[in-house]
Image (tube, rainbow, N blue to C red; front, side):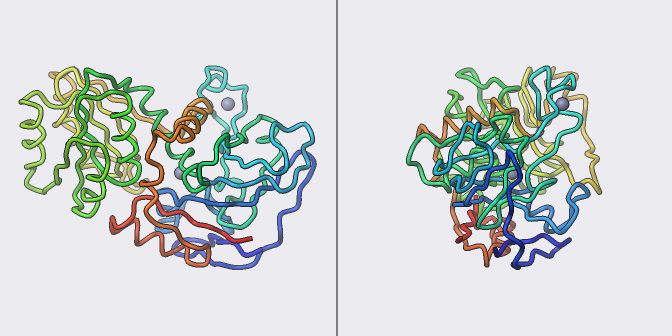
Length: 348
Ligand SMILES: [Zn+2]
Ligand SMILES: [Zn+2]
């Protein structure tokens, strides 16, 4: 088959590889759609120590089971499925506490096993045995279902925030993840939801969603005063940082209202992981900061259910589709803010 093969920094080759062959317990999926993740972009531009090339990336996928060597599996040939992609040990204290995302020995599709920038993806037996494939229970298009993975990560973060009708929410970073955070905040009843970004392109796209407004982040710090004004001098009760920026992390503490919650959703580049923060904001405003990484299987299931319900605007979050042969065109589209989510459609 022809696949998008990551061979190192700035190098994804569209090349032929051997068709996957199944061992006992494995399942083969014909990929309908695979959305491009921000981490794929980061790996492409900067590499990733956890990914040893050659590797087929792509972990946000939906497809149809076409072959099964797992007769007892919860999915059968012909089922359209999505997948919880974290394989956890089930034994460590985090797994036992229900937090598989923090497992001490976790492995992940597209990091340790080939992913779905290919017409076919093999799901290794341990994932199948754990029932990590989920049948899609509606006729919603596969490209929309491919968002179940990233939305699950967003839902994991919202578990810390518990947003409700008392909250006013600011999301810094208006990329696809930021938009998903804003939509989730609204679905959970937030009074007001604003989005901030440096990019006018991204803010324009964000305005198409059910939010109360956007504020452009400027070097003069005027966005901080603007957020203060929009919240009658109090500051938002929740600030979510949905971009990889030390400045945004510092701004979030500045912007948040007293007693507020601040969520650092994205990490910083591993080459520069330190932010300069005014921790007096934590002290005087009694802020609570949380971080989040990946998702638990329950988050994934909640995400799948929400997308299947049709109440989540997945169709509008996917702004671009590309055939596999042109998959690297996704990266500049994402970087320029022209695209939210880009979906790759491999043809068998
Ligand atoms: Zn992802
Ligand atoms: Zn574990």
